[in-house]
Image (cartoon, rainbow, N blue to C red):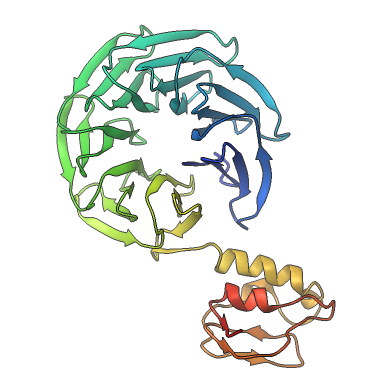
Length: 359
């Protein structure tokens, strides 16, 4: 239901309908640790800016703060009376905002656990996001509106009207001048924070827009939709730069990596995908995962002539030799045994490279 990169770019957190949270090695695609504690769907996960804490919001109405290094639960924040749909740390890490089905927003002091409640929305609050300077909080709701809140006073600063249906996602640009929103009305809108006016609308998704996020450099907006696609938009021109297809069901969440090179997405198809935003295709489980598997299966290979940087993916035939070579892409394998010197079945490697074993 939710994905979030760690500030140091090494870890991806995911929250799921199965009630669990997983921390993944963002480069290799391997699960590092699983966090169990929630008793229902984990709707939202968010790393603290110092990379030490992960916040999670759940169907069970609770918010957990986890120690990222040990995987242990540090704090349980209770105050909402229904589903917590969204959690977000402030830029200095001292405050956590949460939005709930109970129509309220809570601002939590991370150190003390004390909260201030913000009321104003008439229906569920589905998304909350702090401005980069931490002075403003944006919220999107089932009541079709977006509110801007003064964090210090807890007062409502502005109401942004324009969407004709539920606002599922809100996200500030890195410079804090623009807010993006995604809605059930299938549109994405950009809002000028100073004038509080809509300044652009991106149309292209054929179903509701579930998640939006700016790239760290502010030039691109990523969006995930019920139409199963992820789209990348040029913020300046409003034109669609790329359409990333691969998920087979709703894309619930998208997240840019801090280094601006990768978009993570998660879906109802139970998968998480990492996309190379420059070339527009997903990385896992191909390039990154394949290299990792090959290294595990042939531990002696590095002592000879082959190095990871030489393991390429552009082979169009199958090549097997007595030397340390393993090259395949899209090979059709009728029958045969394929094992390495340790007796490990290598057919999984073939499948990872798109080969088909005709059994």
